[in-house]
Image 1 (cartoon, rainbow, N blue to C red):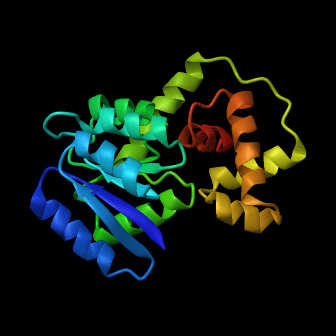
Image 2 (spheres, one colour):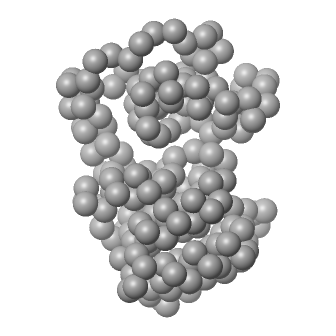
Length: 208
């Protein structure tokens, strides 16, 4: 069962998200918040697996709340769900530690899939947002020296599967190793490739 905390300042949005999640046998909404301050407190008390986080809220915004939640509990996954997909919202959210970024006009199935992927250690993004990340990564790679070689054979295997979009659990099953071992390899890969997050690591693996 994936424990979910819903954070949005609009009651109708939260009600719709709750109905959507409650209809799924593997999702449990353990709490709701309509502002970042309450989200931080509730996340500390209820310890959700995934926080579905809006960005623009009164008082403490979603970016600040994301940073605070992850500072207290790094294992929590924060999935941004917002109307605003511009760079001024995207990159600060990723810098704060969000694992994914979905737009509110996405189909309900994309949100449900995103929550499950986030819980499994993956990084779900709306296609529009992913295209922007790829374009920016291509530009950055053209201006940045290539990372130092030196990956082990197993690290290369993990990198290839990250590039395919597999979650940590799926990689572990494919390679017949533990999830903790996969996480260790990914941490090493990020260090060796200079990738600040899983998305950038996947792009590196694709040769972008």
